[in-house]
Image (cartoon, rainbow, N blue to C red; front, side):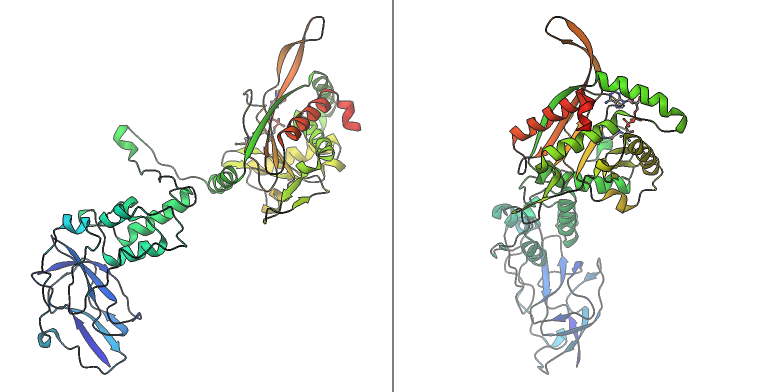
Amino acid sequence: MEKEIFVPDIGDFESVEVVELLVKSGDVINVEDSLISVESDKATMEIPAPEAGVVKELKVNLGDKVSQGNLILVLETTSNDPAVAAPAEEPPAPAPSAEPTAKAAAATPQPAPTAAPTPVKATPAAPPSKASPTAKIDEVAFAKAYATPSVRKFARELGVDLGKVEGTGRKKRITREDVQNFIKRTLTQGIGGAGLGVAPMPELDFSQWGEIETKALTKINKLTGQYLHRNWVTVPHVTQFDEADVTDLEVFRKSMLAEYKDNGIKITMLVFLMKAIVSALKEFPRFNASLDTSGENLIFKKYFHIGIAVDTPDGLVVPVVRDVDRKTLVELASELGELSVQARNKKLKPSDMQGGCFTISSLGGIGGTKFTPIVNSPEVAILGVSRAKMQPVWNGESFEPRLILPLSLSYDHRVVDGADGARFTTFLSRVLSDTRRLLL
Ligand code: CAO
């Protein structure tokens, strides 16, 4: 049976704005479920359903002005109870005894006065859900927040502290969308209470301090940002700094460089580093492992696939060179050259960037003395390489000019102890200082 539901007696409220539609066509509703929120200059209130049924058609829109007797919706009722009829036949409901001002409404935990024969069930004082995804709720601020009961209920269900949400509705009323946007922002930033319990980043209008230009992040920027952020907050990082004397290595590299120049192959420092890393991974197998997702087991890898961080105009990508232990320096140099070109031409496939055991991030071609790279999880360590520099080194009798390469090894302290971190870089430094050791 179809029934028309009208705005009941809402006291002195005349021509009040519909600020929220709380149901839509097809919704199954129970008696006292809120249908719409209306707002006057003085208060916000929700109009409850006088009976249960299925919403057939909503007859009001956001922003409409309504008064007692206006049609809200058509309901397909499930009972034949004649209790509800057109408003003219209804006994007038008592108006709110004390009309709260907007300010008073904002200051009380129950901002919606009883608006109809059936009281609105505002539940601001309901206990916070145990499954709350956000930080602890400040009950005082929550109570003071200016929002309708349904928005309060919605915020409660999602564990959102209304005290932290900026309202964009009239008179800064917090809307359902404000709560949704707060959650979106929190998830995007990964902060704002979701586990870390820190305040969300304020939204700032930078143009108030000068000229600005907004540019969208690239897809690579966004993806890299997500991975780096996850790894930064979930991996307990330690960075071990060291140096390697690569004077002899550089002499050898230059001789090879000349030899392979005509073949279009550039033998760079990086290929020696890749080989040296494989030696170190063989010596320290924990560095060639990953924690399983339970955090209870270490998975040791018997293969040696090395990721190389490549800087491209669209952002950072990490192609993986497979089976570095089985390839010659020349093969590695050739493959690395191809991968860098593919990376910069956006030709890498997802599979080209998977399966790495350890990553090298070389900024040596650019500059810098040291840096703290972020572990490329689920790998457990990453080597940062900075620019090699000629330095005076004391040989016991005199200072000698030696080419010194700065190394920065970041590792996951859950898997690698500090002592092993230092052993790893010491070993690496020894291998790079004496390339004959690469043959061992
Ligand atoms: N010390 C001194 N010089 C170095 C050096 C080092 N550690 N590493 C490279 N160089 C020199 C090279 O010999 C080369 O010199 P020439 O042009 O005279 O031959 C020059 O610097 C440029 O090298 P390159 O960068 O082209 O080659 P590469 O093999 O060293 O590196 C690649 C290749 C793809 C790793 C690099 O181009 C790159 O993209 N690096 C950036 C990685 C990055 O962004 N890391 C940060 C990750 S975290 O945000």
